[in-house]
Image (tube, rainbow over all chains, first blue to last red):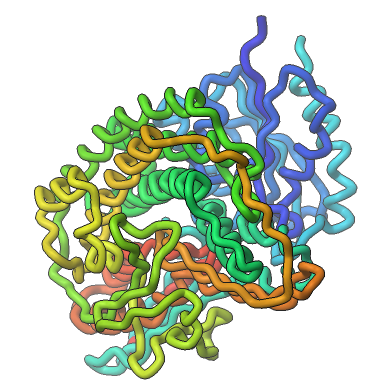
Length: 149
Length: 432
């Protein structure tokens, strides 16, 4: 029997492209079985709580990457996570959560981060068009990742 | 850096506050010439966003202002809208709201103590470095915080941006048996909270006090959280409906946040130290005993000791949650009917960081005509700047790097919720 699989959308849907993670989770709602779908704001201890003990955790987060086009997305393993890859609205984020999880031995067996390049992170609802266009392919990649092998 | 008699400290990002912002300090000779906190304030955006929305929507929308204190936004919004509609919600629904709020206090205060503030006192640059040396301490904090999270999730439906809160009460009230396992966890949390008080009481606190007027809600017979009148250490007392007559906000050029002051009086401070100073007699016996053992007197005017007050408030919130669960009787219905009517309503509650005021003006169809939100961090801004002016003035002999680090710690004393009040923080000090 497979262990727990959790998909975590990180972000704030009232900060434009920062809402990419929650938007992908909304896209997956009712389309995945046996997978825990969660949304959070990136605060490290909440991330630790969500992924501790999981066999697989897939985290979708917006990133600010000026050298990449908006809507571009890429896949990171936990070992790739830089100290602060997140473009979230809090002082400590995903990179801290991964580092803290490592020190506290509270990382999931496998952690995959899908980082979506945002362009507008100010106040407002709704993703920009290029980030919205990335939602379905990112969701498709999540489905591949969580599919039982 | 130092330029020919000018001294500029520049911190591009202040770590371990909730969000982002900026602080500028200008020094001329041996005098602090100017201190400015730059604040970019989300509530102003949300005020505009709320106009034209249904009167039922502000609790859910304003909860998105902050992931750390969504319950505070929901409770103040509900109180203001219910006031506008002429409905008073109390009894078992009010008690359930207080229980939910206890969860938020536990979570928010524990996050601040263990992950944001304790590293300052223990000489670590971050909670991560603290965890490398003292995994046991950080694990204890995370366990205590998780109890708060889980209480929020139990009543609110989820831990961030709870979905079970509505104008009039809740969509669903729990059965007593659903609360029983949480009671057992709270018993464990009470021990963790008491140990936390002992731990932080042993920190080394710099000798620094202020004389700001302190402002908090107060209510007979209990430590004010979800309701109350406003009182100050200067002897003011007024109802929440008179809040805007006494608390004036003014625009300052360096900030999108408005600066609050008391009419005819000036700056003031709200938050844990104000609550403790004004209401410590209302704490439960175990919280009072813990406060006495921790060496807290009748008031708290050293901002560094606010970490002890937060720990005391965790003890109180855990103890109060146990009491509320023991006394819990499910409401007959989970929410009161709140039909809309034209009018204005005001509500204020004690967010973990201090008084959070909301006002809504509704039309006869129940649409929001105007909204106003006054978060605690913008109320405290003038007092924080005043403290920093004195604080820096007493430390001009320090090298820039050390002075900057000390300023960061001083700001963290107030646990500024930057998600609510700012997007924080660059710090620059200009020694002219």
